[in-house]
Image 1 (cartoon, chains in turn brown, green):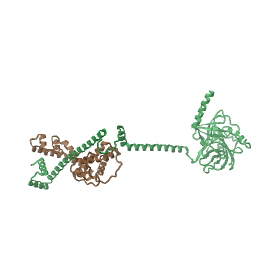
Image 2 (cartoon, rainbow over the protein chains, first blue to last red; image 1 turned 30 degrees about the vertical axis):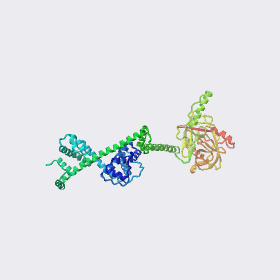
Image 3 (cartoon, each protein chain N blue to C red; image 1 turned 90 degrees about the horizontal axis):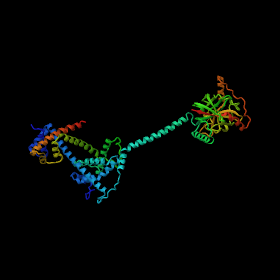
Image 4 (tube, rainbow over the protein chains, first blue to last red; image 1 turned 120 degrees about the horizontal axis):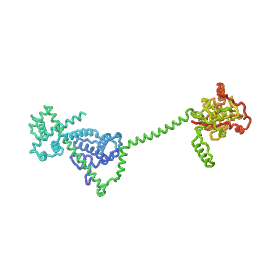
Length: 195
Length: 387
Protein backbone atom coordinates (compact mmCIF):
# COMPACT_ATOMS: atom_id res chain seq x y z
CA UNK A 1 0.00 0.00 0.00
CA UNK A 2 3.02 2.20 -0.38
CA UNK A 3 2.64 5.35 -2.38
CA UNK A 4 2.88 5.04 -6.10
CA UNK A 5 3.81 1.36 -6.07
CA UNK A 6 2.48 -0.52 -9.08
CA UNK A 7 -0.18 -3.14 -8.48
CA UNK A 8 0.62 -6.59 -9.75
CA UNK A 9 -1.42 -9.51 -10.96
CA UNK A 10 -0.60 -12.94 -9.58
CA UNK A 11 1.55 -13.85 -12.60
CA UNK A 12 3.42 -10.58 -12.40
CA UNK A 13 4.05 -11.15 -8.71
CA UNK A 14 5.55 -14.56 -9.36
CA UNK A 15 7.70 -13.29 -12.23
CA UNK A 16 8.92 -10.25 -10.29
CA UNK A 17 9.77 -12.21 -7.19
CA UNK A 18 11.58 -14.83 -9.21
CA UNK A 19 13.80 -12.07 -10.57
CA UNK A 20 14.50 -10.88 -7.06
CA UNK A 21 12.26 -7.80 -6.99
CA UNK A 22 12.04 -6.95 -3.31
CA UNK A 23 9.39 -4.31 -3.85
CA UNK A 24 7.07 -6.91 -5.29
CA UNK A 25 7.72 -9.10 -2.27
CA UNK A 26 6.95 -6.25 0.10
CA UNK A 27 3.78 -5.46 -1.81
CA UNK A 28 2.66 -9.07 -1.71
CA UNK A 29 3.43 -9.24 1.98
CA UNK A 30 1.30 -6.20 2.72
CA UNK A 31 -1.52 -7.39 0.51
CA UNK A 32 -2.34 -10.62 2.33
CA UNK A 33 -1.30 -9.95 5.89
CA UNK A 34 -4.77 -8.80 7.06
CA UNK A 35 -6.36 -12.05 5.92
CA UNK A 36 -3.98 -14.26 7.91
CA UNK A 37 -4.06 -11.85 10.83
CA UNK A 38 -7.81 -12.09 10.97
CA UNK A 39 -7.78 -15.84 10.62
CA UNK A 40 -5.29 -16.41 13.43
CA UNK A 41 -6.98 -13.92 15.74
CA UNK A 42 -10.28 -15.66 15.11
CA UNK A 43 -8.72 -18.94 16.12
CA UNK A 44 -7.33 -18.08 19.53
CA UNK A 45 -4.03 -16.58 18.43
CA UNK A 46 -2.34 -13.27 19.14
CA UNK A 47 -1.16 -10.65 16.68
CA UNK A 48 2.50 -11.61 17.13
CA UNK A 49 1.74 -15.27 16.53
CA UNK A 50 -0.16 -14.29 13.41
CA UNK A 51 2.81 -12.34 12.07
CA UNK A 52 5.15 -15.24 12.81
CA UNK A 53 2.92 -17.69 11.02
CA UNK A 54 2.48 -15.34 8.10
CA UNK A 55 6.22 -14.86 7.69
CA UNK A 56 6.72 -18.61 7.70
CA UNK A 57 4.01 -18.94 5.06
CA UNK A 58 5.46 -16.23 2.83
CA UNK A 59 8.86 -17.84 3.23
CA UNK A 60 7.53 -21.14 1.87
CA UNK A 61 5.98 -19.34 -1.06
CA UNK A 62 9.08 -17.22 -1.68
CA UNK A 63 11.47 -20.15 -1.66
CA UNK A 64 9.27 -22.11 -4.05
CA UNK A 65 9.19 -19.16 -6.40
CA UNK A 66 12.94 -18.62 -6.22
CA UNK A 67 13.55 -22.30 -6.92
CA UNK A 68 11.22 -21.95 -9.87
CA UNK A 69 9.35 -25.07 -8.81
CA UNK A 70 6.07 -23.41 -7.90
CA UNK A 71 3.04 -24.84 -9.64
CA UNK A 72 0.27 -22.47 -8.75
CA UNK A 73 -3.15 -24.03 -9.37
CA UNK A 74 -5.01 -21.26 -7.57
CA UNK A 75 -4.66 -17.65 -6.49
CA UNK A 76 -1.64 -16.67 -4.44
CA UNK A 77 -4.09 -15.57 -1.75
CA UNK A 78 -5.62 -19.03 -1.51
CA UNK A 79 -2.21 -20.66 -1.52
CA UNK A 80 -0.98 -18.46 1.30
CA UNK A 81 -4.19 -19.03 3.21
CA UNK A 82 -3.81 -22.78 2.93
CA UNK A 83 -0.15 -22.73 3.96
CA UNK A 84 -0.72 -20.42 6.92
CA UNK A 85 -3.76 -22.42 7.99
CA UNK A 86 -1.69 -25.59 8.07
CA UNK A 87 1.11 -23.89 9.97
CA UNK A 88 -1.27 -22.42 12.53
CA UNK A 89 -2.98 -25.75 12.96
CA UNK A 90 0.36 -27.31 13.76
CA UNK A 91 1.24 -24.61 16.27
CA UNK A 92 -2.12 -24.90 17.96
CA UNK A 93 -1.75 -28.64 18.23
CA UNK A 94 1.57 -28.09 19.97
CA UNK A 95 0.11 -25.37 22.15
CA UNK A 96 -3.15 -26.80 23.38
CA UNK A 97 -5.23 -29.90 23.57
CA UNK A 98 -8.22 -28.23 21.92
CA UNK A 99 -6.30 -27.23 18.82
CA UNK A 100 -8.00 -29.75 16.59
CA UNK A 101 -11.00 -27.70 15.58
CA UNK A 102 -10.81 -24.49 13.60
CA UNK A 103 -13.59 -22.52 12.04
CA UNK A 104 -12.90 -21.72 8.43
CA UNK A 105 -14.38 -18.75 6.73
CA UNK A 106 -13.01 -19.64 3.35
CA UNK A 107 -13.28 -23.01 1.70
CA UNK A 108 -10.07 -24.96 1.96
CA UNK A 109 -9.07 -25.65 -1.60
CA UNK A 110 -6.76 -28.29 -2.99
CA UNK A 111 -3.74 -26.04 -3.54
CA UNK A 112 -0.79 -28.40 -3.46
CA UNK A 113 0.23 -26.48 -0.37
CA UNK A 114 0.36 -29.69 1.64
CA UNK A 115 3.12 -31.22 -0.47
CA UNK A 116 5.04 -27.93 -0.56
CA UNK A 117 4.83 -27.74 3.20
CA UNK A 118 6.22 -31.23 3.61
CA UNK A 119 9.19 -30.23 1.46
CA UNK A 120 9.63 -27.00 3.37
CA UNK A 121 9.61 -28.90 6.62
CA UNK A 122 12.31 -31.20 5.35
CA UNK A 123 14.35 -28.17 4.36
CA UNK A 124 13.74 -26.52 7.72
CA UNK A 125 15.17 -29.55 9.43
CA UNK A 126 18.26 -29.42 7.23
CA UNK A 127 18.76 -25.74 7.94
CA UNK A 128 18.37 -26.29 11.64
CA UNK A 129 21.04 -28.97 11.51
CA UNK A 130 23.28 -26.66 9.53
CA UNK A 131 22.85 -23.90 12.04
CA UNK A 132 23.78 -26.30 14.82
CA UNK A 133 26.81 -27.53 12.92
CA UNK A 134 27.94 -23.95 12.35
CA UNK A 135 27.64 -23.30 16.07
CA UNK A 136 29.84 -26.30 16.78
CA UNK A 137 32.50 -25.80 14.15
CA UNK A 138 34.16 -23.06 16.18
CA UNK A 139 36.00 -19.82 15.35
CA UNK A 140 37.49 -18.76 13.01
CA UNK A 141 35.93 -21.42 10.77
CA UNK A 142 32.44 -20.25 11.55
CA UNK A 143 33.03 -16.63 10.64
CA UNK A 144 34.96 -17.64 7.54
CA UNK A 145 32.23 -19.96 6.27
CA UNK A 146 29.46 -17.58 7.18
CA UNK A 147 31.27 -14.76 5.49
CA UNK A 148 31.76 -16.71 2.28
CA UNK A 149 28.51 -18.65 2.01
CA UNK A 150 25.94 -16.73 4.00
CA UNK A 151 26.99 -13.14 3.48
CA UNK A 152 28.38 -13.60 -0.05
CA UNK A 153 31.69 -11.90 0.63
CA UNK A 154 34.52 -12.46 -1.84
CA UNK A 155 37.70 -14.38 -0.98
CA UNK A 156 39.76 -11.16 -1.23
CA UNK A 157 37.53 -9.44 1.33
CA UNK A 158 37.80 -12.33 3.73
CA UNK A 159 41.59 -12.55 3.29
CA UNK A 160 41.87 -8.95 4.34
CA UNK A 161 39.40 -9.32 7.17
CA UNK A 162 41.01 -12.34 8.76
CA UNK A 163 44.58 -11.25 8.13
CA UNK A 164 45.73 -14.11 5.90
CA UNK A 165 48.87 -13.50 3.89
CA UNK A 166 47.23 -14.34 0.61
CA UNK A 167 43.98 -15.59 -0.88
CA UNK A 168 45.31 -19.14 -1.33
CA UNK A 169 45.96 -19.46 2.39
CA UNK A 170 42.47 -18.29 3.12
CA UNK A 171 41.09 -20.70 0.57
CA UNK A 172 42.98 -23.64 2.06
CA UNK A 173 41.72 -22.69 5.49
CA UNK A 174 38.20 -22.50 4.12
CA UNK A 175 38.39 -25.98 2.64
CA UNK A 176 39.68 -27.40 5.91
CA UNK A 177 36.81 -25.73 7.71
CA UNK A 178 34.42 -27.14 5.16
CA UNK A 179 35.65 -30.66 5.84
CA UNK A 180 35.08 -30.16 9.57
CA UNK A 181 31.68 -28.73 8.97
CA UNK A 182 30.83 -31.63 6.74
CA UNK A 183 31.66 -34.12 9.46
CA UNK A 184 29.56 -32.27 12.02
CA UNK A 185 26.69 -31.68 9.63
CA UNK A 186 26.37 -35.22 8.38
CA UNK A 187 26.82 -36.69 11.84
CA UNK A 188 23.86 -34.64 13.06
CA UNK A 189 21.85 -35.00 9.92
CA UNK A 190 22.13 -38.77 9.85
CA UNK A 191 21.33 -38.87 13.53
CA UNK A 192 18.11 -36.98 12.98
CA UNK A 193 17.25 -39.09 9.97
CA UNK A 194 17.56 -42.24 12.01
CA UNK A 195 14.80 -41.12 14.35
CA UNK B 1 48.06 -38.56 -1.42
CA UNK B 2 45.62 -35.68 -1.51
CA UNK B 3 43.67 -34.64 1.60
CA UNK B 4 39.93 -34.16 1.59
CA UNK B 5 40.48 -30.40 1.66
CA UNK B 6 42.40 -30.68 -1.59
CA UNK B 7 39.52 -32.55 -3.14
CA UNK B 8 37.19 -29.79 -1.97
CA UNK B 9 39.34 -27.26 -3.77
CA UNK B 10 39.07 -29.42 -6.86
CA UNK B 11 35.30 -29.78 -6.52
CA UNK B 12 34.81 -26.08 -6.08
CA UNK B 13 36.93 -25.35 -9.10
CA UNK B 14 34.82 -27.88 -11.05
CA UNK B 15 31.61 -26.24 -9.87
CA UNK B 16 32.71 -22.75 -10.76
CA UNK B 17 34.13 -23.87 -14.08
CA UNK B 18 37.76 -23.13 -13.17
CA UNK B 19 39.18 -26.40 -14.57
CA UNK B 20 40.79 -27.03 -17.90
CA UNK B 21 39.10 -29.46 -20.27
CA UNK B 22 41.49 -32.41 -19.64
CA UNK B 23 41.25 -31.94 -15.85
CA UNK B 24 37.51 -31.89 -16.10
CA UNK B 25 37.37 -35.04 -18.20
CA UNK B 26 39.70 -36.74 -15.70
CA UNK B 27 37.49 -35.76 -12.77
CA UNK B 28 34.31 -36.90 -14.47
CA UNK B 29 35.95 -40.23 -15.31
CA UNK B 30 36.92 -40.74 -11.69
CA UNK B 31 33.44 -39.84 -10.51
CA UNK B 32 31.99 -42.47 -12.82
CA UNK B 33 34.55 -45.11 -11.83
CA UNK B 34 34.89 -44.67 -8.05
CA UNK B 35 31.65 -44.80 -6.02
CA UNK B 36 33.41 -43.56 -2.86
CA UNK B 37 34.72 -40.57 -4.70
CA UNK B 38 31.24 -39.91 -6.15
CA UNK B 39 29.73 -40.07 -2.65
CA UNK B 40 32.32 -37.61 -1.49
CA UNK B 41 31.35 -35.29 -4.30
CA UNK B 42 27.64 -35.65 -3.54
CA UNK B 43 28.28 -34.78 0.09
CA UNK B 44 30.19 -31.72 -0.95
CA UNK B 45 27.37 -30.65 -3.24
CA UNK B 46 24.74 -31.10 -0.57
CA UNK B 47 26.83 -29.28 1.99
CA UNK B 48 27.48 -26.24 -0.18
CA UNK B 49 23.93 -26.06 -1.49
CA UNK B 50 22.57 -26.26 2.03
CA UNK B 51 24.93 -23.52 3.08
CA UNK B 52 23.79 -21.34 0.19
CA UNK B 53 20.14 -22.11 0.90
CA UNK B 54 20.61 -21.33 4.54
CA UNK B 55 22.21 -18.04 3.60
CA UNK B 56 19.27 -17.16 1.41
CA UNK B 57 16.80 -18.16 4.05
CA UNK B 58 18.46 -15.84 6.52
CA UNK B 59 18.46 -13.04 3.98
CA UNK B 60 14.78 -13.57 3.20
CA UNK B 61 13.90 -13.62 6.84
CA UNK B 62 15.69 -10.32 7.31
CA UNK B 63 13.77 -8.90 4.35
CA UNK B 64 10.41 -10.00 5.70
CA UNK B 65 11.24 -8.68 9.14
CA UNK B 66 12.17 -5.38 7.59
CA UNK B 67 8.87 -5.23 5.70
CA UNK B 68 6.95 -6.04 8.85
CA UNK B 69 8.92 -3.47 10.81
CA UNK B 70 8.12 -0.89 8.12
CA UNK B 71 4.44 -1.69 8.35
CA UNK B 72 4.46 -1.53 12.13
CA UNK B 73 6.20 1.80 12.01
CA UNK B 74 3.68 3.12 9.48
CA UNK B 75 0.82 1.94 11.62
CA UNK B 76 2.32 3.56 14.69
CA UNK B 77 2.58 6.82 12.79
CA UNK B 78 -0.99 6.48 11.58
CA UNK B 79 -2.18 5.81 15.09
CA UNK B 80 -0.40 8.93 16.23
CA UNK B 81 -2.64 10.67 13.75
CA UNK B 82 0.10 12.92 12.41
CA UNK B 83 0.35 11.77 8.85
CA UNK B 84 -2.93 11.04 7.21
CA UNK B 85 -1.85 12.16 3.79
CA UNK B 86 -2.06 8.76 2.10
CA UNK B 87 -4.44 8.71 -0.79
CA UNK B 88 -5.64 5.30 0.20
CA UNK B 89 -8.67 4.99 2.40
CA UNK B 90 -7.53 3.39 5.62
CA UNK B 91 -9.60 0.83 7.38
CA UNK B 92 -11.33 2.32 10.39
CA UNK B 93 -9.18 1.52 13.40
CA UNK B 94 -11.01 -0.02 16.28
CA UNK B 95 -9.35 1.00 19.48
CA UNK B 96 -9.24 -1.82 22.00
CA UNK B 97 -8.05 -1.11 25.51
CA UNK B 98 -5.29 -3.35 26.93
CA UNK B 99 -7.67 -4.80 29.47
CA UNK B 100 -10.20 -5.66 26.82
CA UNK B 101 -7.52 -7.15 24.63
CA UNK B 102 -6.38 -9.34 27.51
CA UNK B 103 -9.96 -10.42 28.06
CA UNK B 104 -10.42 -11.16 24.39
CA UNK B 105 -7.25 -13.20 24.31
CA UNK B 106 -8.35 -15.09 27.37
CA UNK B 107 -11.76 -15.73 25.88
CA UNK B 108 -10.21 -16.84 22.61
CA UNK B 109 -7.89 -19.26 24.34
CA UNK B 110 -10.33 -20.73 26.86
CA UNK B 111 -13.62 -20.52 25.00
CA UNK B 112 -13.84 -24.24 24.31
CA UNK B 113 -12.97 -25.18 27.89
CA UNK B 114 -15.45 -22.70 29.30
CA UNK B 115 -18.24 -24.00 27.11
CA UNK B 116 -17.58 -27.60 28.04
CA UNK B 117 -17.51 -26.68 31.72
CA UNK B 118 -20.72 -24.67 31.44
CA UNK B 119 -22.62 -27.43 29.69
CA UNK B 120 -21.43 -29.99 32.23
CA UNK B 121 -22.59 -27.71 35.03
CA UNK B 122 -26.00 -27.19 33.45
CA UNK B 123 -26.43 -30.89 32.89
CA UNK B 124 -25.39 -31.69 36.44
CA UNK B 125 -27.91 -29.18 37.83
CA UNK B 126 -30.78 -30.57 35.81
CA UNK B 127 -29.82 -34.15 36.54
CA UNK B 128 -29.78 -33.37 40.26
CA UNK B 129 -33.13 -31.60 40.16
CA UNK B 130 -34.79 -34.34 38.14
CA UNK B 131 -33.22 -37.00 40.30
CA UNK B 132 -34.47 -35.36 43.49
CA UNK B 133 -37.95 -34.92 42.07
CA UNK B 134 -38.06 -38.52 40.94
CA UNK B 135 -36.78 -39.74 44.27
CA UNK B 136 -39.37 -37.76 46.16
CA UNK B 137 -42.15 -39.01 43.93
CA UNK B 138 -40.97 -42.55 44.53
CA UNK B 139 -40.98 -41.89 48.26
CA UNK B 140 -44.47 -40.46 48.30
CA UNK B 141 -46.27 -43.18 46.43
CA UNK B 142 -44.66 -46.45 47.24
CA UNK B 143 -47.47 -48.75 46.22
CA UNK B 144 -50.62 -47.99 44.33
CA UNK B 145 -50.88 -45.71 41.37
CA UNK B 146 -53.80 -43.29 41.58
CA UNK B 147 -54.65 -44.39 45.09
CA UNK B 148 -54.02 -41.95 47.87
CA UNK B 149 -54.14 -42.77 51.51
CA UNK B 150 -55.67 -40.07 53.62
CA UNK B 151 -53.31 -39.46 56.46
CA UNK B 152 -52.63 -35.82 57.00
CA UNK B 153 -49.22 -34.26 57.12
CA UNK B 154 -49.38 -31.53 59.69
CA UNK B 155 -48.13 -28.57 57.79
CA UNK B 156 -45.65 -26.04 58.89
CA UNK B 157 -48.11 -23.25 58.31
CA UNK B 158 -50.37 -24.69 60.98
CA UNK B 159 -47.52 -24.76 63.40
CA UNK B 160 -46.58 -21.19 62.80
CA UNK B 161 -50.20 -20.18 63.07
CA UNK B 162 -50.46 -21.92 66.40
CA UNK B 163 -47.26 -20.33 67.58
CA UNK B 164 -48.70 -16.96 66.63
CA UNK B 165 -51.93 -17.67 68.46
CA UNK B 166 -49.97 -18.66 71.51
CA UNK B 167 -47.96 -15.50 71.36
CA UNK B 168 -51.14 -13.45 71.13
CA UNK B 169 -52.66 -15.34 74.05
CA UNK B 170 -49.59 -14.64 76.10
CA UNK B 171 -49.78 -10.94 75.37
CA UNK B 172 -53.48 -10.83 76.11
CA UNK B 173 -53.82 -12.93 79.23
CA UNK B 174 -50.32 -13.65 80.38
CA UNK B 175 -51.43 -17.27 80.56
CA UNK B 176 -48.80 -19.66 79.24
CA UNK B 177 -50.00 -22.70 77.38
CA UNK B 178 -47.91 -25.81 77.44
CA UNK B 179 -45.73 -26.09 74.36
CA UNK B 180 -46.93 -29.07 72.38
CA UNK B 181 -45.39 -30.91 69.52
CA UNK B 182 -48.19 -31.12 66.98
CA UNK B 183 -46.95 -34.43 65.55
CA UNK B 184 -45.87 -35.33 62.11
CA UNK B 185 -49.02 -36.96 60.77
CA UNK B 186 -52.58 -37.17 61.93
CA UNK B 187 -55.63 -39.28 61.17
CA UNK B 188 -58.94 -40.15 62.75
CA UNK B 189 -59.82 -43.03 65.07
CA UNK B 190 -62.89 -44.15 66.97
CA UNK B 191 -63.71 -46.26 70.00
CA UNK B 192 -64.06 -50.01 69.53
CA UNK B 193 -64.93 -50.92 73.10
CA UNK B 194 -65.86 -48.86 76.16
CA UNK B 195 -62.68 -49.89 77.99
CA UNK B 196 -60.08 -48.33 75.77
CA UNK B 197 -59.73 -50.14 72.43
CA UNK B 198 -59.72 -47.95 69.34
CA UNK B 199 -59.74 -48.53 65.61
CA UNK B 200 -57.92 -46.57 62.92
CA UNK B 201 -56.31 -47.23 59.56
CA UNK B 202 -53.01 -49.04 59.41
CA UNK B 203 -51.40 -46.43 57.16
CA UNK B 204 -52.09 -43.70 59.75
CA UNK B 205 -49.84 -45.31 62.33
CA UNK B 206 -47.36 -46.74 59.83
CA UNK B 207 -43.82 -46.05 61.01
CA UNK B 208 -44.98 -44.45 64.25
CA UNK B 209 -42.75 -44.04 67.28
CA UNK B 210 -45.52 -42.95 69.59
CA UNK B 211 -49.24 -42.31 69.29
CA UNK B 212 -51.39 -39.70 70.93
CA UNK B 213 -55.19 -39.79 70.99
CA UNK B 214 -56.94 -36.48 71.33
CA UNK B 215 -60.66 -36.18 71.95
CA UNK B 216 -62.97 -33.32 71.02
CA UNK B 217 -62.59 -31.73 74.45
CA UNK B 218 -58.77 -31.71 74.07
CA UNK B 219 -58.31 -34.64 76.39
CA UNK B 220 -55.09 -36.47 75.46
CA UNK B 221 -54.22 -40.13 75.95
CA UNK B 222 -51.18 -42.16 75.06
CA UNK B 223 -51.95 -45.23 73.01
CA UNK B 224 -50.12 -48.22 71.63
CA UNK B 225 -50.90 -50.43 68.65
CA UNK B 226 -52.28 -53.82 69.63
CA UNK B 227 -52.72 -55.38 66.25
CA UNK B 228 -52.37 -54.30 62.64
CA UNK B 229 -53.80 -55.75 59.46
CA UNK B 230 -51.87 -54.36 56.50
CA UNK B 231 -53.95 -56.08 53.82
CA UNK B 232 -57.22 -54.53 55.01
CA UNK B 233 -55.59 -51.32 56.24
CA UNK B 234 -56.75 -51.79 59.83
CA UNK B 235 -55.09 -51.09 63.17
CA UNK B 236 -56.36 -51.69 66.68
CA UNK B 237 -54.97 -49.42 69.40
CA UNK B 238 -55.30 -49.46 73.15
CA UNK B 239 -55.06 -46.53 75.51
CA UNK B 240 -52.35 -47.16 78.08
CA UNK B 241 -52.76 -44.16 80.36
CA UNK B 242 -53.33 -44.95 84.03
CA UNK B 243 -55.81 -42.15 84.58
CA UNK B 244 -58.06 -43.36 81.75
CA UNK B 245 -61.31 -44.77 83.07
CA UNK B 246 -63.33 -45.79 80.06
CA UNK B 247 -65.22 -44.04 77.32
CA UNK B 248 -68.63 -44.79 78.69
CA UNK B 249 -71.23 -46.72 76.79
CA UNK B 250 -70.78 -46.68 73.01
CA UNK B 251 -73.86 -45.41 71.12
CA UNK B 252 -73.26 -47.43 67.94
CA UNK B 253 -73.02 -51.08 67.10
CA UNK B 254 -70.93 -52.90 64.48
CA UNK B 255 -72.52 -54.46 61.42
CA UNK B 256 -71.35 -57.97 60.63
CA UNK B 257 -72.92 -58.31 57.22
CA UNK B 258 -72.49 -56.18 54.12
CA UNK B 259 -74.43 -52.99 53.57
CA UNK B 260 -76.65 -52.41 50.53
CA UNK B 261 -75.92 -50.24 47.56
CA UNK B 262 -77.44 -46.79 47.82
CA UNK B 263 -77.37 -46.80 51.61
CA UNK B 264 -77.14 -43.26 53.05
CA UNK B 265 -73.83 -43.11 54.94
CA UNK B 266 -71.97 -40.47 56.89
CA UNK B 267 -68.66 -40.02 58.66
CA UNK B 268 -66.97 -37.81 61.21
CA UNK B 269 -63.27 -37.06 60.96
CA UNK B 270 -60.44 -34.64 61.61
CA UNK B 271 -59.10 -33.42 58.26
CA UNK B 272 -58.68 -30.08 60.03
CA UNK B 273 -58.16 -29.16 63.66
CA UNK B 274 -61.92 -29.39 64.11
CA UNK B 275 -64.26 -32.31 63.60
CA UNK B 276 -65.84 -32.42 60.12
CA UNK B 277 -69.01 -34.18 59.06
CA UNK B 278 -69.28 -35.82 55.66
CA UNK B 279 -72.33 -37.40 54.05
CA UNK B 280 -72.96 -39.47 50.95
CA UNK B 281 -74.10 -42.88 49.85
CA UNK B 282 -72.58 -46.26 49.34
CA UNK B 283 -71.79 -46.44 45.63
CA UNK B 284 -70.09 -49.82 45.18
CA UNK B 285 -69.48 -52.98 47.13
CA UNK B 286 -65.86 -53.23 46.00
CA UNK B 287 -62.98 -50.87 46.36
CA UNK B 288 -59.93 -49.82 44.39
CA UNK B 289 -59.32 -52.20 41.47
CA UNK B 290 -62.12 -54.49 42.59
CA UNK B 291 -60.84 -55.12 46.11
CA UNK B 292 -63.82 -56.76 47.88
CA UNK B 293 -62.57 -55.87 51.35
CA UNK B 294 -63.58 -52.26 50.66
CA UNK B 295 -66.66 -50.20 49.83
CA UNK B 296 -66.70 -47.33 47.45
CA UNK B 297 -68.53 -44.34 48.92
CA UNK B 298 -69.43 -40.93 47.57
CA UNK B 299 -68.28 -38.84 50.51
CA UNK B 300 -65.77 -36.09 49.82
CA UNK B 301 -62.86 -36.98 52.07
CA UNK B 302 -59.54 -35.34 52.66
CA UNK B 303 -56.16 -36.20 54.18
CA UNK B 304 -56.85 -36.68 57.89
CA UNK B 305 -60.17 -38.48 57.35
CA UNK B 306 -58.38 -41.82 57.35
CA UNK B 307 -59.48 -44.15 60.09
CA UNK B 308 -62.79 -42.37 60.57
CA UNK B 309 -65.99 -44.36 61.21
CA UNK B 310 -68.51 -44.90 58.41
CA UNK B 311 -72.06 -45.28 59.67
CA UNK B 312 -75.39 -45.96 58.02
CA UNK B 313 -78.76 -44.25 58.68
CA UNK B 314 -79.60 -46.37 61.70
CA UNK B 315 -76.25 -45.78 63.41
CA UNK B 316 -74.61 -49.08 62.51
CA UNK B 317 -70.88 -48.86 61.89
CA UNK B 318 -70.31 -50.33 58.44
CA UNK B 319 -66.74 -49.32 57.59
CA UNK B 320 -63.48 -47.47 58.24
CA UNK B 321 -62.39 -44.68 55.84
CA UNK B 322 -59.16 -45.64 54.11
CA UNK B 323 -58.34 -43.73 50.94
CA UNK B 324 -59.54 -42.24 47.69
CA UNK B 325 -58.82 -42.44 44.00
CA UNK B 326 -57.16 -39.35 42.58
CA UNK B 327 -58.46 -39.56 39.03
CA UNK B 328 -62.10 -40.20 39.94
CA UNK B 329 -64.64 -37.67 41.16
CA UNK B 330 -65.41 -38.16 44.86
CA UNK B 331 -64.53 -41.82 45.01
CA UNK B 332 -63.46 -42.72 48.53
CA UNK B 333 -62.88 -46.17 49.93
CA UNK B 334 -63.65 -47.67 53.30
CA UNK B 335 -62.74 -51.05 54.79
CA UNK B 336 -65.83 -53.19 55.37
CA UNK B 337 -66.78 -53.61 59.03
CA UNK B 338 -67.14 -57.37 58.53
CA UNK B 339 -63.36 -57.58 58.19
CA UNK B 340 -62.93 -55.63 61.42
CA UNK B 341 -65.34 -57.98 63.17
CA UNK B 342 -63.52 -61.03 61.87
CA UNK B 343 -60.25 -59.57 63.17
CA UNK B 344 -61.72 -58.86 66.60
CA UNK B 345 -63.21 -62.38 66.75
CA UNK B 346 -59.89 -64.01 65.97
CA UNK B 347 -58.13 -61.84 68.56
CA UNK B 348 -60.72 -62.78 71.21
CA UNK B 349 -60.33 -66.46 70.33
CA UNK B 350 -56.55 -66.16 70.73
CA UNK B 351 -57.20 -65.03 74.31
CA UNK B 352 -55.50 -61.71 74.90
CA UNK B 353 -55.03 -60.09 78.29
CA UNK B 354 -58.10 -57.92 78.09
CA UNK B 355 -61.33 -59.21 76.49
CA UNK B 356 -63.09 -57.27 73.77
CA UNK B 357 -66.48 -56.21 75.09
CA UNK B 358 -68.17 -55.14 71.91
CA UNK B 359 -71.23 -52.90 72.21
CA UNK B 360 -74.42 -54.83 71.45
CA UNK B 361 -77.09 -52.20 71.52
CA UNK B 362 -77.54 -49.28 69.27
CA UNK B 363 -78.75 -45.98 70.77
CA UNK B 364 -78.70 -44.06 67.55
CA UNK B 365 -81.36 -45.92 65.63
CA UNK B 366 -84.42 -43.87 64.83
CA UNK B 367 -83.00 -40.55 65.92
CA UNK B 368 -82.32 -37.58 63.68
CA UNK B 369 -78.96 -37.08 62.05
CA UNK B 370 -78.16 -34.14 64.36
CA UNK B 371 -78.76 -36.25 67.47
CA UNK B 372 -76.78 -39.09 65.99
CA UNK B 373 -73.81 -36.82 65.43
CA UNK B 374 -74.04 -35.30 68.89
CA UNK B 375 -73.84 -38.80 70.35
CA UNK B 376 -71.13 -39.97 68.00
CA UNK B 377 -68.71 -37.06 68.20
CA UNK B 378 -67.43 -37.93 71.69
CA UNK B 379 -66.19 -41.28 70.41
CA UNK B 380 -64.26 -40.01 67.44
CA UNK B 381 -60.63 -38.96 68.07
CA UNK B 382 -57.63 -37.43 66.42
CA UNK B 383 -54.80 -39.91 66.13
CA UNK B 384 -51.48 -38.07 66.19
CA UNK B 385 -48.40 -39.88 65.00
CA UNK B 386 -44.82 -39.08 65.99
CA UNK B 387 -41.94 -40.49 64.04
